[in-house]
Image (cartoon, rainbow, N blue to C red):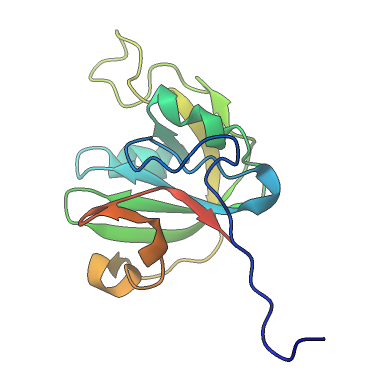
Amino acid sequence: MGTGRRTQTFMPNESAPFDPNQSARNLRKIHLGGVVFGCKNNTIRECLVKQLFGLPAQHFSYVKNIDPGLPLFLFNYSDRKLHGIFEAASSGQMNINPYAWTVDASERTLYPTQVQIRVRLQCQPLLEDQFKPVIMDNYFSHNHFWFELDH
């Protein structure tokens, strides 16, 4: 019988060695506690107005594990601020809106891995210096982090 706090270690993918160059940690559905999506100054408004977040196709390996109610965040690469708190209003899917984030909807989106969202709690955006200590284990380089959050 231990008296300390019980800890768990999650391997990114138990069948493969750790590789910081891969695009995902590959957390299993039971270990996925939240997901960060990305935007830029020129796409954030569309994300919020359409209540739709998206990522490139290679992120589907974990976005498919999103169920309604899962906490979501939106990271703006332009000013490096984290927006939220949002929650999934749908499961993670491919091409909910196949023309989102395009100039005139004449071409297919570069961000087909999508989830519909709703605001869970309106908060002031956090600067990267404010949230980085909380997700430090997700950073695989100085300013790049995995978007999958564990509990």
